[in-house]
Image 1 (cartoon, rainbow, N blue to C red):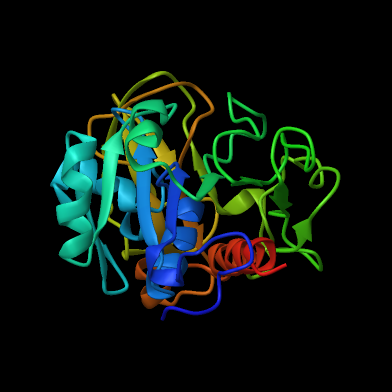
Image 2: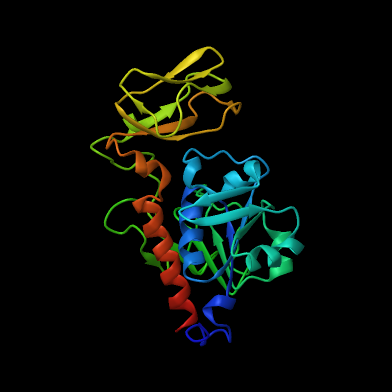
Length: 277
């Protein structure tokens, strides 16, 4: 496609470069939607990312070399010079470059998306690209980013904010099947994480899903283990290490969530809005 993004750029959609900071669940939902829409997508991560919904997080490529999510593959590379060959293979390159400066200088992105969902701004500024997008709280559209995407579940999920900030973090997980905080698996002590169940397993309320050293992490509700961090991770007391889906549909463990799709749609809309004004 060589028409469309013309007002602010002479590039067609398949030439527009999008650099995404983060490669967890929400960032991966964004990357998947943009890749499927034929943008050139590159992702950035920290050296040892910890993802709960690992089956739908491209950051797992850092441990496994490649990671597939709904038919799209990411590939871990060690230097920006490898990006072009990964794009040529139809994959999403992912690099360890936490602030993104090395990669940004090399590929000169048209769009920079801060998708680390930190609930605060950890260094993103409006001059990182012609269009800078921030996901959720911590960004102010018109100051440190051009556009903010609402990430709070509810009526405004995925909405573009052209001036101002997203809703503050509530600290309460979204309601799924009538449950919120009960869905989460959290540690009761510091130690090394060892799963006793696996993503996709069915568990009952009270089941031991994992242990931290010898202390159990138990399910508070019955359902399917939708997310679980990797074996051997050192965890802190009170840390989120997994989640249970009470709907009981195993396929939901391996597909992008409605929330991630909505946010991805918001980012896609933001790009088209900005460059086609």
